[in-house]
Length: 114
Image (tube, rainbow, N blue to C red; front, side):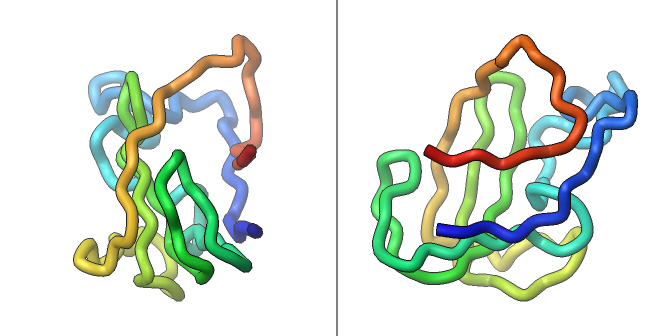
């Protein structure tokens, strides 16, 4: 598995939250998992993603952030730039991932998978 994304930084901004909080990425609004180009995840073989089966291939990964969980989507609508929402009819997976807090602040956005 590999992933390609542009790594934004916090720079003293509120990243996730409500529009009233002035969040850079408000809850419930499409997010492309990074900056610039859409984020793409590639699987060399069949795998599981949050317990769901996924076939080998390249997918656009995106989210709808929430306070308690992020809704994550994988779509075959790849090769787009910027704030381009996918054609949701091309989704191959939608799953919810609970929000956890490490207690540490991270300046640069980092994706980690187990």
